[in-house]
Image (cartoon, each protein chain N blue to C red):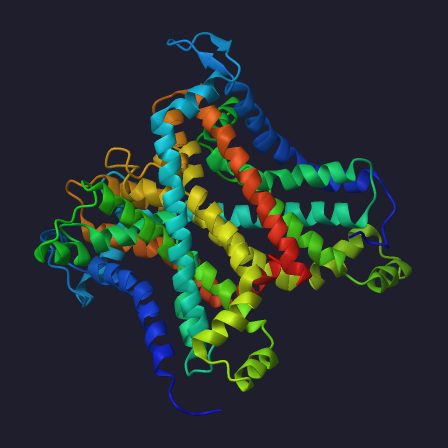
Length: 276
Length: 293
């Protein structure tokens, strides 16, 4: 192998990194600057260290027309965690049932779950809204989370993991007197823990990034997620205090990005394994 | 594939699948059924009575030039997003697969945008391309390009495509890189020894082996572009100026919740469901092929 520096690859990758980092850097630098200067178009790529106070201020007060940002972050966080955990629990249970048991209508149950893959919210906006209002779930936190918890993808993934668990392991557990519940809790879940970690990252990001669903079912400002909040801020373009908008954008993307970077190894493997 | 070892019991497993089935029935099957039912009815102007009209809503839909336009626009949008995000991702993945310094670092820097919400990606782009405050937008205007994506429909489409594709590059990059790394080094070495060079080797050896990943990603990207970009478009242009960035999903939203045309919007939902079913079927065909390989 030659030890020469591979310039073309470095140039292409460098440009790629720039393409992703530049918008983020611009927003980060912009958030610390004087809003009047930004409105005039005098945005500098050098952050103004004195301007970082804007973060404390938006966390407490938000922007005109929205609630405080800490609240939106809290709603987003609660939503993302509930959806991720809810999906994982419900999918483990149903995947366990369809792979390790025989019961009437087993395949019907499996296909019914599978069908949800074909019915994203985006294609059934109006009827879903009317079902939600019949159930009195509009503008409630359960309404924001519970309908998104059913998951064909997670169920399929766990089913695949469970299918390749060696028969010997199951037999050994049975001989040691482990019942079905014990087997799930003490053997199956620990064995699939790396899948669990990967899935948690993917589902947390999915939950955090929801836009259409909260737009549909939660119209009170109390339930604004950070993603909804930032789009609202952009919408009121007269008198926009751009530094506040930019600071909110930074806070909106920081948590999911941090989760992905910190759990990168599990996340990448989980994503690419899951699709096989 | 089925398991050989199984646990006895009937009530217990049914109890285990019940929560998932209940959610599916209430939040997926019921609304989907409603969509099909109300796609065949029409409300009077006061919303008091609905009458059964059969396939009339669908006839109206496919003879409505606005709907046909929206289909065309969605096809252009999806194709462009797919091509752009996959092309860039493939180029980056090929470079990141080489033995170069700082590989790990490059990878992290290219993977993080996966986590950015489509709507937030749109916000980043607004701040870059805004005609008055955006760095690029202002630069264009200063250099004699009349840039305002809120007024110019071609520019609006370009911005929406760019923002949607930008966000998807990471996802494609992850899969292309995994695909490239699963190609046995011996195959590449053999091609090298046979004198196959650079681009020729890529086209004749690497690309054919990468084809399952390519097909899989095409389907995933089409689904992403068609459905998940609602937030991007809503944040950037709300479908405007005029209707120039109104894709099918934006139109369902506008007609159903803003113009309150329940029958028409439901008919559109049913058409979209048919589209998703076709795409999902395709996806599983390619998935099957991928796991065979």
